[in-house]
Length: 138
View (spheres, rainbow, N blue to C red):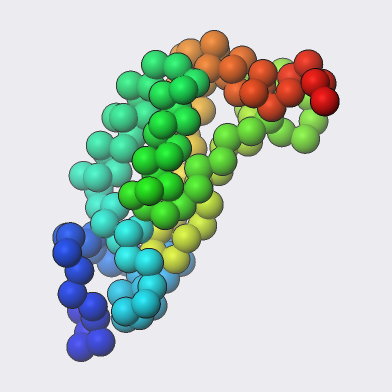
């Protein structure tokens, strides 16, 4: 850590190896006004988050996990049908938005875990489609 680093009330993850990630770790750590919540997601916290996603039981629970991610990380987990016809779970767009300080690995592992969940529990995928006007309701 450099001298301009901010003291944070929670432990932060170690910096990614140079060139492996473009998360902006140093920039976020150096800026006292930045949102430091993404820095709290270390490997253990990431595994806890992935385990929580695996335990999702229904669409309401998935929305609750989205709200927890928004609250604790400050990033939005978007889950919505793609612009074309949705024939499989691959047609559903799942994106954890980029946020300064949020590691690239987390931005990849969380959507992958959600996609696995939707494949295992298709009723949640159907609820997502229904919530986004599957039947063309005005």
